[in-house]
Picture 1 (cartoon, rainbow, N blue to C red):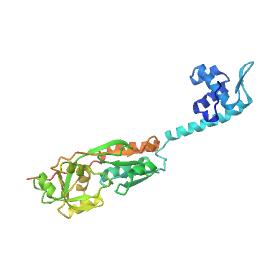
Picture 2: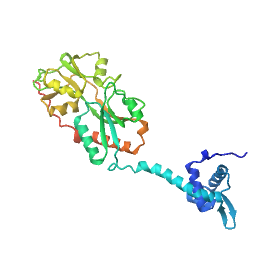
Picture 3: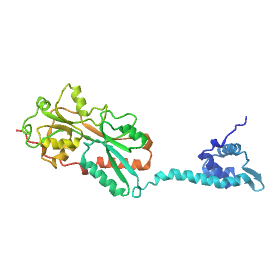
Length: 320
């Protein structure tokens, strides 16, 4: 039974065989050129004849010769393959020095300012014509939806349970410390769990709806409760409140140590055995193979794992 093929049956493989057949005017020569078996090329020729409704190659005294229809097809086939090759090559030819792309990155606002400044500096140096837009994660910001629809390229997060539908790459690990003003009443005392929980704590609002952080999850599991004295909408407000009060803050070490370099604050170890905070990179499948997005992820990973942005640890407050 003869099979019938439509033009929709043509794929890149068939086009390559058709170009070779029309160029070589020989099934055996076309097979050698494409590194295929002669029967495979013969089968493809039968499919092409059925699709085009033309014999394409006919016997002549010198072997085989293309029909008029085949001769007319050769140039369009070459152009089609060139266009397909252009589509495949365009991503490989991404040039960061010439790109004018806007890179959209979302981060929690307690991500170390030194890391962000070094990252932006690196991107501006390698891709000077590009734009970098840093978005702050917040309770009303749908980060997963923004990755899905292309509003964001990547998200830096540290949810204990990252969204399963996204791709993830670990960046770095941070431990939880206690930040307070220099001269705080607890600075010179041994701080046990009871003293720590009874102190006045300042807490930033959660940056994601339905996501509890490492600290809240651990305290809930251990059935422990902090004495919360104040809530603030942004993490970067915390150091300024601490400098003017006897409140304390529990958060990432790199965040705390950065502000200790610029403000009269000190770092103390927490008496609660919090698990580490794991920061990672999140992105959606829609940008997984895009060359410019892969390049952006590589830059973020390289900077996050580099020691260049990490603050020199200030000495812990001495305890009598």
